Length: 265
Image (spheres, rainbow, N blue to C red):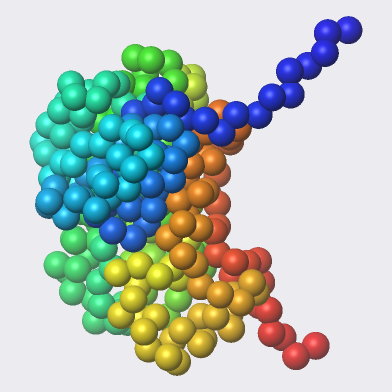
């Protein structure tokens, strides 16, 4: 009987990653985590100059970095950016879509159509355009890893967030659908669903003491997230160690979606 090779690898050496929304928050943490494991990283944001700090983080790990400005809602912008990445860094093998927007929390009857359009354009179309653009390299190579950033709001209802929750629910469904379509090419597609995380987008809410206290109380582990909590999960899902995981919508939420931690039983 031949002894099985039980070696586990988390290395991303030789991989070319794209991270959208890379200038700050979850995107910056994901770019740093992927670089730490050996990937070169294309840092994509609406304004390339905003990615300067992220580029420095990637390069501090000895990896190549490329900053690009791109409107993720524009297919033409995305396709042009993807072509430049392939030309300058090489074929894309990893993708993480962290670009996202959050509009005002209002009840459904108060949602403005322009906010619906913005949520759909950035959160949904932006993820889809980049997944399709990256898949061209991945299909050619017969290998790829895609991690889409959804939200716990795509799994459980939060008050006055129907529009945002719908957009993030669509991202979760997208991950499952693309996982089925591209499995034959050895492309895995998964979604992560963060809880409240200390990022520039969430800070205006979390800086309200009552909101922070309520969120912390609702999370069984007793704390809101930090960007590196998400970056670590992204790096794992992109690694060889996660090669059999696809079509998964993974809460990274300290137990929020597992159940209510404070029932008086």
